[in-house]
Image (cartoon, rainbow, N blue to C red):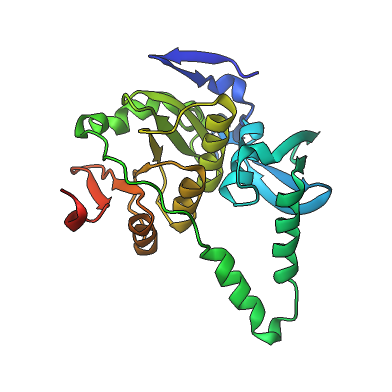
Amino acid sequence: MHAKRTVGAASVPDASALGASQSYQYSNLEGSAAAETALAEEVALAIAYNGISQAVMLVSPSDLEDFIVGFSLGSGIIASPDEIYDFRLSGCGSSMQAEVEIASRAFWALKEHRRQLTGTTGCGLCGVEAVEQALPELQVLPATALPPAHWLDGLRQRISDFQPLGRHSGAVHAALFMNDQGELLLSREDIGRHNALDKLIGALVRQGIPLAGGVAVVTSRCSLELIQKALRAGLQTLVSLSAPTGLALQWARRHNLNLIHLPQHSAPRVYSPAMENRS
């Protein structure tokens, strides 16, 4: 278990216990005496489902259990957390493995997807299948109210307390969750922005935290993949500290996901729902 420190009503991993950074020596171009600084670590995590290799992800070596659950759900490999029966992490150093046991139905769908993407590149069909996987049919969320404006007041400053690894070493993204009372509950950090959101989703699922009325916050730019992960997890509002892409905005509106950009020096920008749809 990671050591914790308390910030308000929430618990935050202590950067010294994360195991996701190490100190390295450096010098400047003038050849001055060596100094040390903390740098974020990354490991190659090979993920297999029911014995079949699926992906190798470069991740920060912290909260990997949360990542496995969130990646499986956010990538559409499982439809619900109940379809994960068990998983085991092994390995050390820069190479780790995750053996995940999933329900037969989910495994059959995964094998069918892999079969569709296998074929000759000249047939013209493989690209079609790949596009269908990149732009899948996802369930439209029930419309939900936008968060009160004061929830976002000073948010950039407040989330700093939930980024211990980022403050310690830099080079990482964060994803955070705010409950239906506007309280920041937990965060997850990773070198990959997708990974950070996967870890957050996994943590919410594993801890049984209700999502209704809550807000997910990502410190990275908001592209389509993050929208899809939020939709699959059932997150109803996504706040991004960097601007969304046009396609991300279109998908958010189409699927009733509240999408808000929080610029550094101006007021929050509500992209979804569209202004004409707001009463």
